Image (cartoon, rainbow, N blue to C red):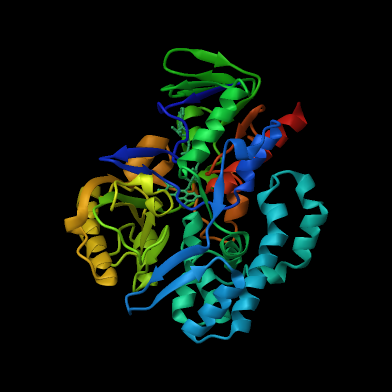
Length: 463
Ligand SMILES: Cc1cc2nc3c(=O)[nH]c(=O)nc-3n(C[C@H](O)[C@H](O)[C@H](O)COP(=O)(O)OP(=O)(O)OC[C@H]3O[C@@H](n4cnc5c(N)ncnc54)[C@H](O)[C@@H]3O)c2cc1C
């Protein structure tokens, strides 16, 4: 098996770099469902612990609001319910009911929507699908996530906290359906994890596993075309040569796969026209100092969440009071920063690249972020930054071919988004398959791994 990769390194968005003595994970920072990584080692008869280790986080996230409220979300569901009820004056029973419903939604939908191809007729006649359909009223598909959270919880800080889960697939809580309230189940019940060596060890360990299995990697090889003969994929073409194969799998963003690699083939226009997910602006800051009030994951919320999403999705620009996400891996791995220092990955949600003036937007965002951090943490951060790099939507597209720099392919801003995602195979070109974050079942590391699993099952069931 041969992998052709445009970059000189494996991993795409799941990459890392060092800068002035600081190590940074470049993209993903939140890790859930580690068993999907471990399973790959088991599949080849290897002991996962020998190659990939991780630990469960006791603290899910530290939250900060502009009105001075602070709240630490515990990974223990009962502790979370007790502490949140006491802090925000809501009934414990309301929170318990919300989380139970979240779990139910996840358990009903995961076997149907996440673990199988939605585009094979057999999926619709399975026991799991019939069970899910019988309980469709429990799924909260009718309202948007914010409306669902306002009705179920009401308290504004907690509504905002639970609205944030819409961003886990790059969507707006004011438009994505209430079924997304299943995502907290992943964090608050199944847990969040930190891989030893940082997120990049997911890439490194899987790359080494692939090498041990004899897979050949061709780095710096930009695929220019998928070869098609008689409506069947026969290989790929790079700048230098053609490579023929029985099966072709594209892990490139589905929009770019069609537009760049299959320009003469019929395109699924409705799928490709879907609204893209949000992108991000990230500052990687090496900070001279340590901050005990922060943990691995921290959120400093915007005072006007609705306006923030209006700016991102309607006006396609940044909001001056953004929600700021701080990820600090040196909290878990002190060696990621020099002694007495911390490596801050500082991210705000951003619209996709529609040709905005990113230089001006980034300069303004930098000041807004510094002002917000200084206000909420009572510090003077600019004076402590001793190393700096920045990632923008155009750079994300340039480095990974993700159309408009979207983090998760298409957004889930409609009730039908799951059905409009491209299947894991082409129904027009035989022997052509698609995996990764822009096709079924969606973006984010766990779903990308599930997409690979569904694709592999489809290929082997054909063989
Ligand atoms: C800043 C950021 C933060 C994120 N945070 C999280 C998080 O906390 N948790 C989480 O689970 N997910 C997160 N995500 C999303 C997650 O990173 C993606 O869903 C996932 O990594 C996508 O994997 P992929 O393989 O589909 O795409 P990519 O990682 O983009 O890989 C595509 C690969 O294809 C290569 N390629 C493209 N075109 C060609 C071509 N023509 N020829 C050869 N090679 C080509 C690219 O070079 C790249 O290596 C984040 C993403 C970003 C950018």
